[in-house]
Image 1 (cartoon, rainbow, N blue to C red):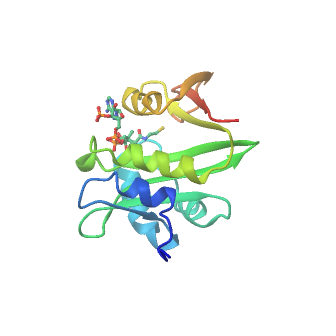
Image 2 (image 1 turned 90 degrees about the horizontal axis):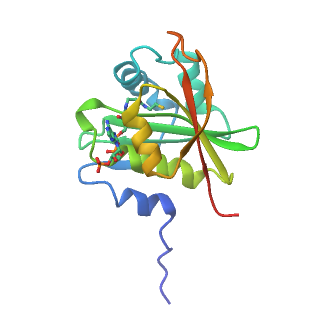
Length: 164
Ligand SMILES: CC(C)(COP(=O)(O)OP(=O)(O)OC[C@H]1O[C@@H](n2cnc3c(N)ncnc32)[C@H](O)[C@@H]1OP(=O)(O)O)[C@@H](O)C(=O)NCCC(=O)NCCS
């Protein structure tokens, strides 16, 4: 009898990453690396330290990181249940490592870990790159939140519905 357990969804997703990247669950130990990544990826919207610690520690939050060959975090995404829907609350890939499929794998890892049939996220109206990633992943715009961001920009809410 084959004693090897079958691979989980995140193992399969990790295989989609090109070498030397590695997908793994993030923990509170990643707070410094996450703070550095957020500052680079969200110059206008970087979360304060307390929020970063929350996203890394709150129960019920799913969180994944991608590391490079040196073990440095170069991508991060997190999701959680809010009012019955699974929300992707953040996703960021370091500029030097973009367009290699890391964002897609991080998004899919969070989606796989969230059990809700409806998935949602908010994105800056001007952020066409992220919107392209979400559209490709099956999300469509369902709402607009006027002046949601600190600089007054609108947010678009995008949603994906999956199997009943
Ligand atoms: C959005 C972000 C996470 C995408 O990460 P990424 O690792 O570059 O994304 P991927 O390589 O997995 O892209 C997958 C697909 O999404 C689409 N896509 C991603 N970025 C895109 C861009 N800038 N322009 C157009 N399409 C884009 C493409 O279809 C891409 O496939 P392709 O490269 O084969 O054409 C990254 O650009 C980022 O961190 N941006 C700053 C932070 C941010 O805006 N986060 C989202 C907040 S809602």
